[in-house]
Length: 481
Picture 1 (cartoon, rainbow, N blue to C red):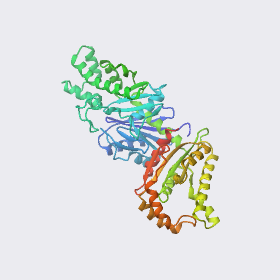
Picture 2: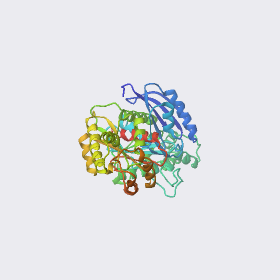
Picture 3: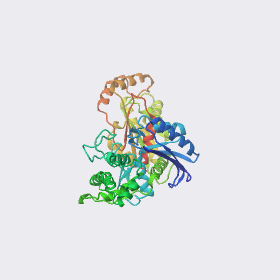
Picture 4: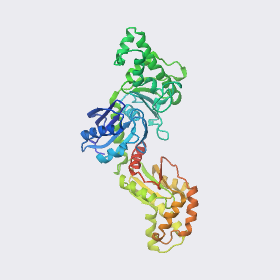
């Protein structure tokens, strides 16, 4: 990636939409903002307008932080609260518009990524972060890696602090978002009979002047947040808890009215340093990191990587492999591509010879990978269950492959049988014939993915979303960089 490469970082909030062109070192070169909206199409339109104004030839990628539940590996918004972009196909539409890769993640994950590199999180390996604004976002860093669980871990704003409390946008009651967000603060102010335009700074000023009602509002706002922080400390034992977002500094100050009481759950709590800029900076830096890690050019000193496209015969893995190669630019090594020229030259062969040739072709693939420069990424198309697992592990070790991701291609046995039968006339002698179909159907019932590293499930009876696959690859391999 060129030294002067830049990215556009976008931070989507319930109140504001922020976007900025960011340098590779995290410097904001140009920034824009718009008002947010509950209508996802309106939000997407405003984001697209800002991207057009910020885009230049030096921009190589776009990062977007989105509130709510996000599957970063697939680049998909699963659900949201105040702004729900689950139906907007945000990443795909921005990629189509700009022709540049888009990295999508939860907005608090993006903010924490920025604070870890440039802000209050520097020098810490284990951090929990709450972003306090219209709602409350959350992110957890363990051993300098964002915790994701299956996809959406870190939703700290949905820690329950009152089982009989307000109904949350997530459908549950009493989440800390309902008690300690900016929206909740507005409710506390209204219930106390104050003018709705009273700011949090004015509350602090009134509190300092002895206004009991103002102090009560701040205590009501802060105590549930303290309970959520204590719960987070009990769960993750972080080095540091950060409070970010537009109200992070105010929330940190308000916690003076709600000190930690449980001696087991003590942890330093600090305000984030980057303020409202954290989201756009983190989004851009994550996008630049993903672009660097998925560049087809060789980066000396990095381990080789393999994208394992796995599935039994007729499972559709060749289609998936070619689609990945087309979008990512990585070389594709397929078992049949290596094996078939030998069958053509050698002529007819029985099934046992075909198996022997398959094992030799498998070894040849990993020999080619091992001879490639460090930092290379290969797509390998094969049914990896046709040999013992240890054979693969030995090949990977000898080839110097440290990182793998897997695509598991599958379909019901009856579908595979129909596909296999339709292709019998196109297959070279040596491949199993129609007699193999009952065996194939049984194999489909028991075949399993390797589950070696990150796994993407592909039901090949459905249309294949290659944009989602490419986004998942960028995000997943960026975390291994």
